[in-house]
Length: 237
Ligand code: UDP
Image (tube, rainbow, N blue to C red; front, side, top):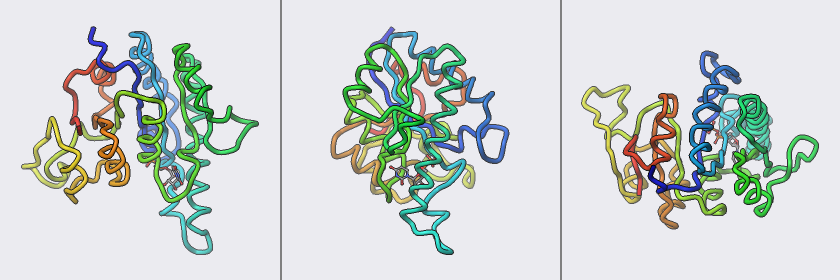
């Protein structure tokens, strides 16, 4: 089996955790995701997860009517914490050893994110789920994911989406939209139709040549295949 990627960062957005519900968390679906992650961990690869909070609160959307943007972002970061706690418990219930580390001060509920501690957990083949994004407002968990991948020396950022990669146009609106297997950072940053990931996150990845694969994680074995370095989704590199 290819050992192309030994440490991966998986970015799960909040809305992917809702499953059959309009918002919130679908525990059955998260249990299924745990099984997909376990397949990767069982190959000896180390897995870091950055989880979003869009299924509960997005700062930019809730700001207004008296709620400051910074407060909205704090609420969003707390939303990621709710998801991270649910993921951690459900992963452990599915026999995936997991630790939740937080980038916001929340010592009663999670260990603080400390670089050496995260590395130690990963070396023991525990999945590390990071709560609270980057801990700072005005960015999203996409950007926080790229920063974390750089910090923890991951080989790749795997961005799970509803679609199976990056298309030339919005595939929901255009029948002639084509899926791309590869894309340059330059194209991903400059093409205004590419909205699958934040431009800030893409710019940072480009600056530090951190590859990103955009793929559909809800297809059985896709995560394992992409972690094995197989061609799945779109590789931005
Ligand atoms: N957020 C933040 N700083 C971060 C990461 C997240 O302020 O480093 C806030 C921001 O308001 C964001 C919300 O948390 O909208 C939830 O994260 P995100 O929108 O990235 O979630 P996703 O769309 O991936 O579910």
